[in-house]
Amino acid sequence: MPEPIVFYDIPRKANVPSDKAWSPNTWKTRYSLNIKGLPYRTVWVEYPDIEALYKKLGVDAPSTGPTGAPYYCLPLIYDPNTKVHVSDSAAIARYLDKTYPDNPTLIPKETDALHAAFQRAFAAVFNMPKGSISWLMIPETYVRLNPASQGYFRRTREEWFGVAIEELAPRGSEKRQKHWEAVKAAFHEVAGWLQADGHEKLFFLGGETICYADVAIAAWVVWIRVTFGEDSAEWRDVLSWDEGRWGKLTEAFRRYELVDEGSPLEL
Amino acid sequence: MPEPIVFYDIPRKANVPSDKAWSPNTWKTRYSLNIKGLPYRTVWVEYPDIEALYKKLGVDAPSTGPTGAPYYCLPLIYDPNTKVHVSDSAAIARYLDKTYPDNPTLIPKETDALHAAFQRAFAAVFNMPKGSISWLMIPETYVRLNPASQGYFRRTREEWFGVAIEELAPRGSEKRQKHWEAVKAAFHEVAGWLQADGHEKLFFLGGETICYADVAIAAWVVWIRVTFGEDSAEWRDVLSWDEGRWGKLTEAFRRYELVDEGSPLEL
Image (tube, rainbow over all chains, first blue to last red; front, top):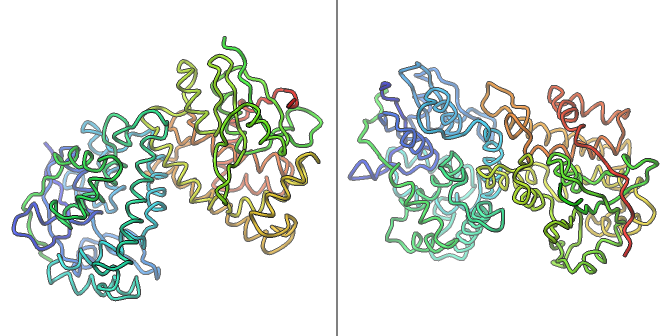
């Protein structure tokens, strides 16, 4: 059994550990680790500490922001078995497949390039990074963050979008409804890929088994579910989309939703 | 051996059959048929006859144009062995895989949904249908068509783009250079998918073997090659992109470039 991988995740307000995880990007890695069945422990990092964490570890920023400056974000893992750090959820999935080839595969080698194309398609369909799902979810996410993260989150998101978080998609507004419809349409387009052959409806993008592309979709579905809650009108609406496909996907992924108690980052 | 499939393709001016084929969308089907090693015969259809052909055969238009009206386009095949017509190159590939499963596979079942995502990604990267490659290639294509097709082609393309064909990308213009750079950048992004894992460079999107996503890329590469010619500055430029990747792809696809003499459509 390998030593536990250190998995850096962003917490939100929660009474129990299982409620702490919310970020769609880190969910991709949490699902990946759980699917591969690898031991890991979560280190919870508030937003303002992410940059300091990277610098302390001597790890380069995983990407650059809109201004070209380094952009420090999670997920990040440290694997004590190989003594390497890996950031970016897709890169982490590829790393885990290479390092632990005997555990379930996330990106079958012959689909590696198609997975890269999938990520481009997914970003195009959801019009990322500034698509409707962001307008809709950022305000809902903000109120659920710990105070330690809220200031940073507000400042950065208001810089990107040029409006106050509260103005992105106010509840009851026509704007919010429009963004919600756009999110529904985007999921519908993804559902179309799963019945491209016109006769059969695939359940997973990987065919018979889950692949990393399914993980990426499930991470956005879980974001909506844990943010609004299972009793919300929003989640009931999602369950009604595409003949219940997203509810079924949720059920298939529940077994991979382990959230350990973990520990807060100590810088 | 099955009876030859009827393959409807659009001709251009040519002294020999092998020079007739040029359309990227029908090349996808020609490559598909040749890769699967299925017998077929080409029926050459000039643009103004495409709609009449569909109506005579009683086949629905494969898509709708920008105004929502039926849009009649090729490829279209008729398989006398099953007595079915299939249009749209991806749908044709899926049909051929299902009907002739013992011949080489174009879309492995477990990549069906990823292939659909690939098509979306490819369209996004090339900003289709009105991206730079169209601005660049439409004027070059126009002058190489038979007179029977030129009037239709000019009228429809000038309606779509709102300018005269000659104004899309005049030779020597800054506009043309800008579109050429955009096409180069788009191919570069696709090349990035083939080295997504950061260590290895895949040759085919299918991994070890050609898959339909490779066919789709090769069809655009051959469009550039046969339009400008192998001795052109444009083709030499393409050969220099991405460490010669597109030249190598061309060599891998040459064995699938059979163009039979075929016969003109008789309505």
